[in-house]
Length: 145
Image 1 (cartoon, rainbow, N blue to C red):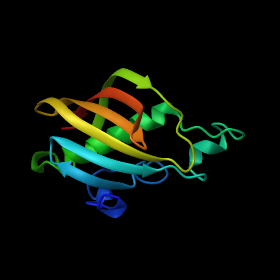
Image 2 (cartoon, one colour):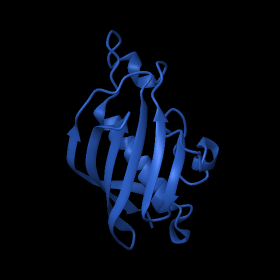
Image 3 (tube, rainbow, N blue to C red):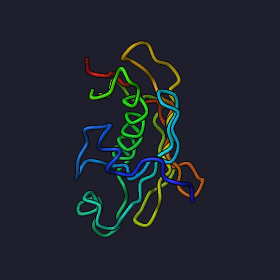
């Protein structure tokens, strides 16, 4: 397993998300403002499994996109000019869901910032389980000024 660069407490110093909506567990790699690799351990007691679905627990696709967005926010908000700010969704494009993500899976979340002009940008994002793509999308963000 890769070495942990940032644990959840260190992530909380960068993004404002808190339980139950802090959806990344650790950051493994980061080039500030350029790319990030993070990890989310999918657990049986994750809040969404109470209703999605009790008999066949599946991680909602929209929450996996949110996990990717939070990883991307760590990358963007680590830049000195954006420290202490909030990154907001500005759009989601080309989202594809390729496999179910269930308790016991470990999601590897990768985001590469492909364009940025000031506080607005786009990240190419994908989440994998055991090297197999589960989700891919482009996420657009706007850093609150």
